[in-house]
Image (cartoon, rainbow, N blue to C red; front, side, top):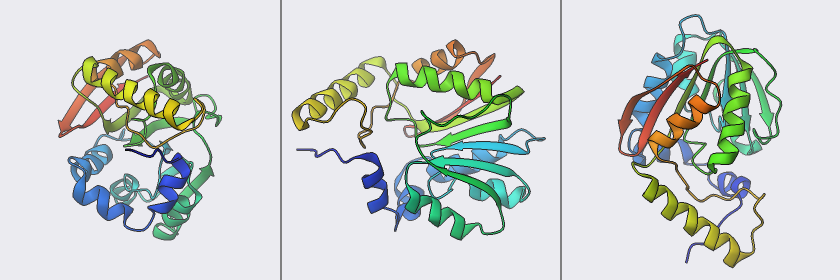
Length: 217
């Protein structure tokens, strides 16, 4: 059966080879990173990156705009170390922590981005997070979320139920982050973002299960 690994452990074990895996094996990733950079607001100076990992989504952004100020949050120190090694010149403020617990501040960012990080959480958790992201953006600020999403609520429910069953079977408490994919349906994500206070939400692109949404405060 599937053994659920705690999130930080999962990613610490996979730092080596992680970039290659994402770029080569996950449908839509390589193109998604480029698209994310292209959709950054033109005047963006301060960017919040949730689950920044080794910074794959920052490559294209920093290549075009080396002066971006980036605040990156990730649970895995080993990944942040890798990111620092890759971009020693960049203006990075890296926080090793849980973005559900980290204070983003109010109206501090022009843009928030997340790529392949948010597909492990329930609607309830996401709604609270999206509200805080919305508050952290300046008026007119943009949140770009590139993530694994499913087509239907039925698919969403099947995965959520399976995750709950495995947690119970393995005695893993609700508040422990585990690496098990529980993507939401695209429409559900759009609804949550609107509910969280974003004025305009659109689906920009989808390839395989990788979907890019753009939400404007």
